[in-house]
Length: 376
Image 1 (tube, rainbow, N blue to C red):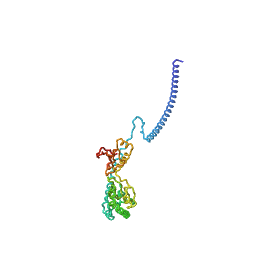
Image 2: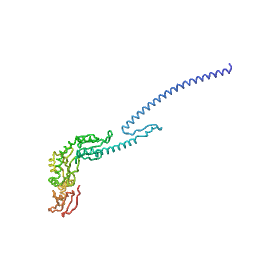
Image 3: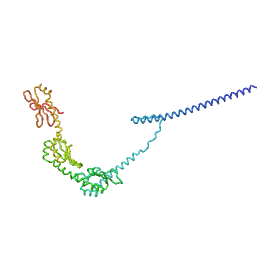
Image 4: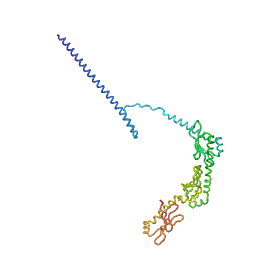
């Protein structure tokens, strides 16, 4: 065999071995790639599960912080996130326009409704029939006979079927109705007027007696002696009243006839009748504290001074000075005076409490002010 053939065979064998090695390498590489791919899928699934778990935990944590009133933090990616745009129109303009429309409509209905029940011939004829006078107060129309309130009409802020409506009620709120026309109001008044008239008729004698009491000379003399006076209160639809005041103008009590309940009261005392009221009026000084604020302060100061002049420490102090002070004061029209004397009984001064001011002054033997002690 020549050398050329030997070389060819050797070359073929080497090529075969190389191909076999390459085939084995490819097989091993393919298996490795398959294993890595499976591992990557498992890792991706685990990461996905972990991300889902973290998201749930984050939502739970946010809920908990929200309940506790804590700030809710955001743990997102550092990469910019797309934020959806807010709606361009939040309807505020529509709300404002509709609110303006309804306000204008409500005011228009108020004018229309009040004009009808205040000025229409049908309603004015109705009021004359029942001797009623209408007075508008804001969104209400009050129907009165003399000074006595009978009915109240309150306009509703809306309409039904385009009709202006009122809530009607009697002065004592015993009866109510929804009305929108004269005939409905007429029916309501006709159903209640006799009862209201009878109610006021029962109160009239009491009101007259209270007026007589306020001008009775016996009562006026008694009040003057107690430094009190009586004054009628401004007219009110729901009551007749008189105030009894102290000399300084402060209110002591009021005698009231309640038109709704028909009760008679003197301050916090309920009177069973006008006669019972009269008896209580003549003993006001036993039922109430008739002292003025100034008088209360003065009497408090007098109690303080009376205790002081009896105090052993105070009397001992005066003894070291060779004098004594009266244990009880002399009451004068304008003051309470405690005389200060020496051991021989000679008056050397006066401790004086002024009734009107509550001031305490120290006078010398010539009745000249030495000093003053300010009231508390």
